[in-house]
Image (cartoon, rainbow, N blue to C red; front, side, top):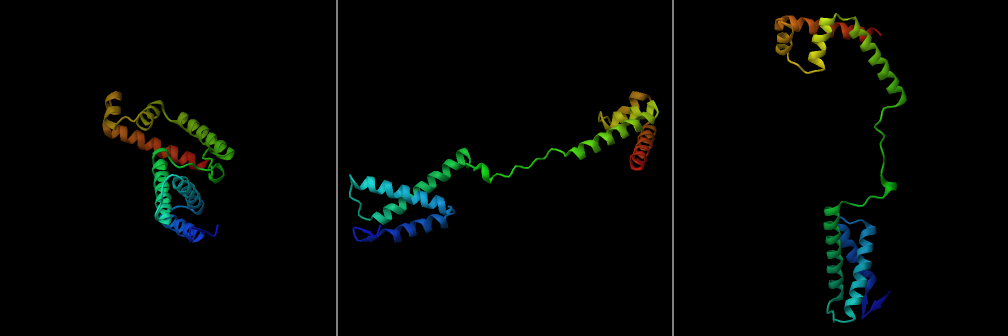
Length: 163
């Protein structure tokens, strides 16, 4: 497309494309906007006189770019499935087996604690009860509750490391 009304349109297209790319558009998007702008200019010129068609083309392309940006902000960008990297965050089979082994070890260790120490420990760690609440529930002092929890924690830590 060398000339139309004495203009070198390839040069105009290149300027418009460059302007769009400077504003953050990809080369492909810029090409699409220039092509759409050219079509709109051609259709508009069939019924109206355009005194500065290159400036008109630039304005149309910029408006198309702005409209596309606004639409993307409202509905989100379209993403090509080939460009998406899907990360599987689920544990591997080895991690699942190891977790089951740790759970079995922990259950075995909890079974070795006295019933009172186990209840106090689980009340704090699982149920989220405070030392004061546990002490009131069992009729103990806060210091005694601290000792039960400390004893259970030390025993569980040692047992889990040894196995």
